[in-house]
Amino acid sequence: MPTLTIRKLIKFGDGGVVITVPKAWIRYYGLRAGDKLEVIADGELIIRPEKERLSSSRRRKPNCK
Image (tube, rainbow, N blue to C red; front, side):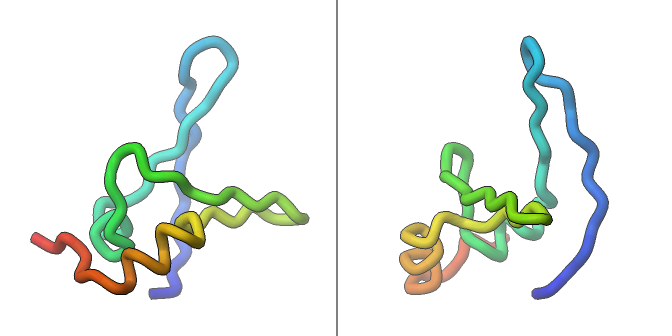
């Protein structure tokens, strides 16, 4: 599911920001509120499900409605 999308940073609290992800991605990767994501900053930003979470979510069917 390679895809490119533009997301806005939303101000959160005192100096923090958050980014939302599309609902389709949440369903595709079987994510839920509170799940951890890896954020890699190495010349570019890469956001991906935590490796441990990704391997366990691939073993079960994502919650698709």
